[in-house]
Structure formats: C-alpha cells, structure tokens
Length: 224
Image (cartoon, rainbow, N blue to C red; front, side, top):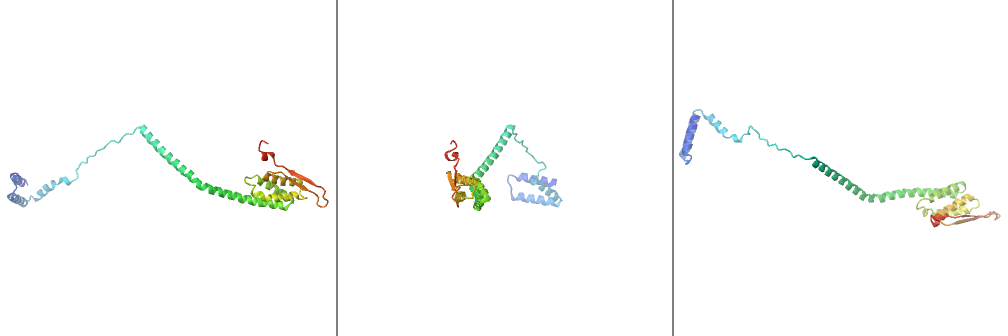
C-alpha cells in the first residue's frame, strides 16, 4: 500500500499541471500492480475513508437560547386583557339574548292571557248560572261576580251579567241584601247609580225602592 501511494503520488504530482493519456495508463498499471500484490482491500478502505463526509458526525452541536423573561407587570396586563375579552364575550351573549327576547315575549304573553281568559270565562259562566238559580245560590253567585268585577279588563266580558243582576233585583222574593249586591255589581261596572222598585204582586202593597250609588272616589277621583 505504501508503494502504491508513492507511485500514485509521483505520477499525479508530475502530471497535475498537464494530464494526458499516458498519465491514465500509468495510474491503471499502478492499480493493477497493487491489486496483484494484495493491496486491494486497503485501497477500498482508503477510498471509503474519503467518503466520510456522508457519515453522521460523532458529535452533535446544540445551540440553546435563553427564553425571554416576562415581568410581573406584563403577566398582569396579559391576565387583565384575557379577563376583559371574557367579559366582553359574556356581554355580547347577554345582548343577543335580550335582543332575541322580543320574539318570545309576545307569544308567552298571549299564552298567559289566553289561559287567564279561559279561566275567567269559566268562572263567569259558573257564577252567572248561580244567579239564575236564585235563592242562596244567587247570593253566592253575586259575591263571585263582584270579585270578578274587580279584575283588570273585566267590564267588557261582564256586560252580559248586567241584565241578570237587574232581573234578580226586581224580583219580589229577592232580599234587600241581595238587591244591594246586585246593585253594587251594576254600579261597579257602569259607574252609574241604580234603583230598584218592588211590591207585592197580589195586593200591590209593601212597595219599596232600593238605590245603590257608586263610590264618589271612583266617579270623581280619589280627592272627592
């Protein structure tokens, strides 16, 4: 191997400036002679050693950089910004909810009013039937109707009971207490005074008049 290296070095050094066909022949002859002398394995090893640039280096260079240091004020500012973002999202969702509530409120109000109207109608029909029955039942019906009359927006649907109360108060068998209750319902719904006259049908005697007046505060205001 040493002989081969010396021969090759001499040939290359002599012809480096001016390579020729003769140089190639000389290199070929030197290689053949070295291989014949058993130097082939050493030549292969030398050639492979020249390709060491393809191998992974035995050492690995690591470049470690120091992370940036954040101050407490920076961390506090970041946390404050995150909290502001969360609160802004919460306010936005609340605004959307309140803006969309107008779509639900009328429906809910209609359902509630519809349920109340149905209950009011049933109660009005029940107490009106008691008034038509007369006697003790009529008194119970008058009390119930007077309670219904105090409810908001009750005057229009209760207009049908005005005639029933008037007919009951004009009966001779109706007591003065029931006449006063019937008159109270009429005056409460109309804000007008009402009078009832009755007498004995057979003899025309025992005639008397019941007059019911609305409260002055309801007619003229609270200062009356």
